[in-house]
Image (cartoon, rainbow, N blue to C red; front, side, top):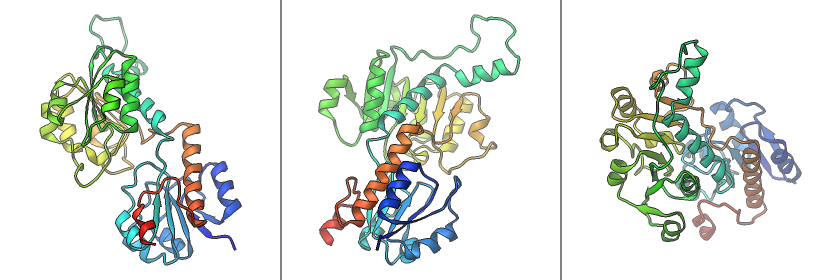
Amino acid sequence: MKPSVYVTRRIPREALEFLHSHCQVRIWDSDDPVPRATLLEEVARAEGLFCLLTERVDAELLDRAPRLRVVANMAVGYDNVDVRACTARGVMVTNTPGVLTETTADLAFALILAAARRLVEAARFLAAGQWKAWGPMLLTGQDVYGSTLGLVGFGRIGQAVARRARGFDMRILYYDTRRYPEAEQTLGATWLPLDDLLRQADVVSIHAPLTPETHHLIGERELRLMKPTAVLVNTARGPLVDEQALYRALREGWIWAAGLDVFEKEPIGPDHPLLTLPNVVAVPHIGSASIATRTRMATLAAENLVAALRGEVPPNLVNREVIAAS
């Protein structure tokens, strides 16, 4: 008999067909997140769970899922999953790294350009009929070409942004808890302590993982270190930045602008304070949102799930210690 799996959202056809060919599939067939009560009911009989960042996989859920063998998260990050609790119960956790690197780096650089050059503000100005004449300083922004880029986190996506920055002749700085000597050489990047990077960068782009240690990595103290002409971009995880401090920084002119794809609590509504500011470019967590990338993410998550249910080591296993303990 095919193993039973539960899919928490409508996913691309290719991935769903792959799952159907190997598993008995039940799905929350909607573009909206599955209600928590429904999820807890469905996992009771599931051997595999295909989930998104919107689903919290914690001890409560795991206690309701005695047959669960694998959680396949359709994302690079897995801060929505209690990995330790999964490991303690012998449940494998997988993610989808690599496939979204270039797409997310594209968006990060788009936000850099849009925030620095006030593109959204200018588009709204035009649409509102406010453009009456060309003016010498009308909607002037900050130059990106030849400026200094500071990358907070220098993994796959951070390095992909650095590659794009070379085409803009940017000076590349980075901060990470580890050094990348080969990337330093090939990309011309320089490691600096975080405070020094913040003081020197014209653009700060965040690409760090969310952990208890990195929560509010960028707060009031860090924002006050930045230049008043600096742009902050976050395409990683919202809680890396203290949003209340960021709001004050943007309103009071500690920094120039921000480009945000992620927020502390998602989704946000139109009354969110940051959306009231003209120097914020905000989009709804679309870093990996190209058709090709989202399809590949879903397919990779499905492949991870099926491999685990076959008794194989999934290609992208997060908690390898679960194998050693089995």
